[in-house]
Length: 190
Image (cartoon, rainbow, N blue to C red; front, side):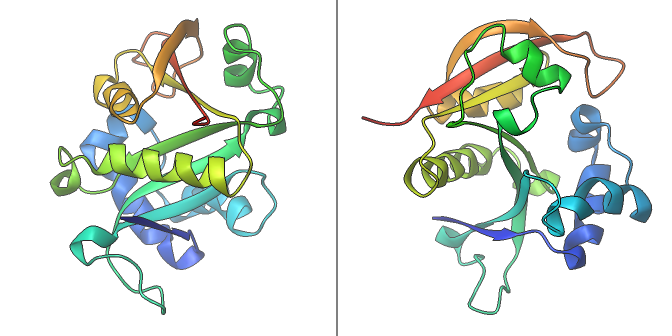
């Protein structure tokens, strides 16, 4: 069972470490200095951004957060409503393939250490967050755009039940990549 805890500033060192891992650096292309992590994650921690960031814990293997929040996290997942970012290039591009409404959510995610990859944790984390979106937040659909070359990421979406709905061009996170992105969607279960 996957459990989530909101990211706090005490987690910024861990996020910097994870963002610096080769398998994340390749696709996130994120600065890892303390000031960069503060710039990119601080507003969410402070409630100044509609996007929320969570650490994921694998409770099935005894590493979930306890009552005191202790435990060993394995991943990061972000969630946001698409309508909260109407002018972002990604929203504009995805909107050409999917009619985005107020109950449509997006997610972004990573698995922290290389040792945690290839074990199905990404798929489990995605499925668990989608369950939260559908059951607790009244979401109707989760729509995700992924760099077409990031096969591991879009395969995790497929394993979590997402279906390919189209291709769009979005400025890539990493300038070495082409703009080609695949768009996947998962609707609320009936």
